Length: 88
Image: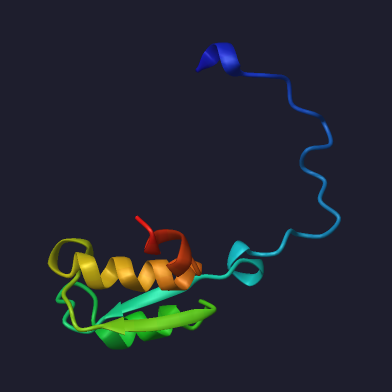
């Protein structure tokens, strides 16, 4: 890692306008897991307000384990890749 270090401009700290937060310019999906025991669904819904889309799944904290096919379908649909995966 040290070999990859490079000099930094003395002006690197000067920002005329802060860059927009990524969630303001990029489509995002927040999946509320309604049976999550680690984070209550109400708290998830508060966080989800920043996402451009919100979906709910009747699953626990780890839908990638407990509902992987449903999660995959949801993510593929969000990505607009239905047609790309249809032939595979």
